[in-house]
Length: 164
Length: 163
Image (cartoon, rainbow over all chains, first blue to last red; front, side, top):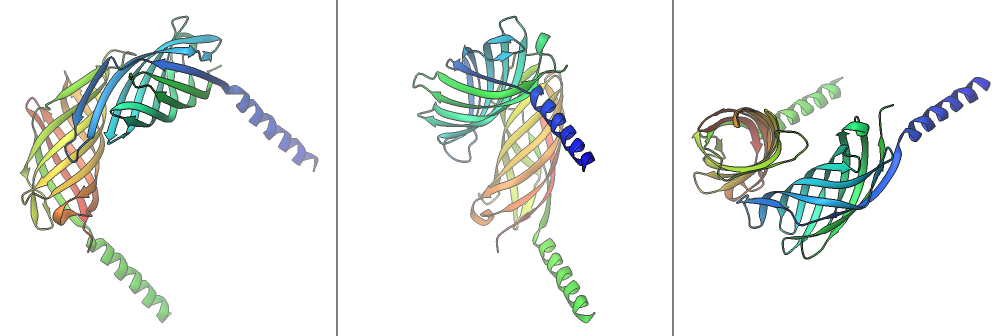
């Protein structure tokens, strides 16, 4: 019986250690209109297109990773647009206030109105970084709303882990 | 014992019936130079980009589906390119000799040299069709070999039509 209790405590301790290695983060990202945007109509039906775009964003509420604040980001997006819906695959390059960078791969879906983003949501995973953020791992969820002028605001929540 | 043999025979017969419902196809299409073609550099490292392109691909060796030959494809492709490697997602709008249409989604990878695709491979699946091809289902693989004038794709797979 005593062995069982010790074994259970060891497992609980191990799980707690793993859980504590993940640090929570949250932030708000304000994105401008895409600087570049290209579209190709697929041709099988109206309003079905492949689109790539890129936009610059600033963190109005910064992410804090390893004590460093996020400053700005550049997001490159592939969207398959079908009518007023799109499925998106992105690559984000986030620059921190100390110049370090981290990379993310968001994937999600958006709703459009008159060709302009109305709302969107999805999941993201970190894909490494530079400097203090080298080896960064983690994941996040995001939700956003667009404005008629093509700008958008995104709320991000997640957790990260850095190698020890 | 006898009932076991009967059950086994029924299962074998059922599996054979399912297998025979799938018809094998193969073909070769020659894609010209992509037009249009767009790319955006991601910015984290040199030669990492997102690209979309579209190409017209007449069949040089048509496939036969439901007694009709395939005529041409229009392929629209997204590629994430990292150096000489790319992962690809495509949507293919195909036209048959009788005007019927079929649609295919593809996923794969490609290698390139000096911006020209050398080879490509991946999988595809039917996602729709019109006329005699309404309700078509099936999947397969493709292999592509590139040159300065475009890519030659060889496809293999199988399809099934509703009865």
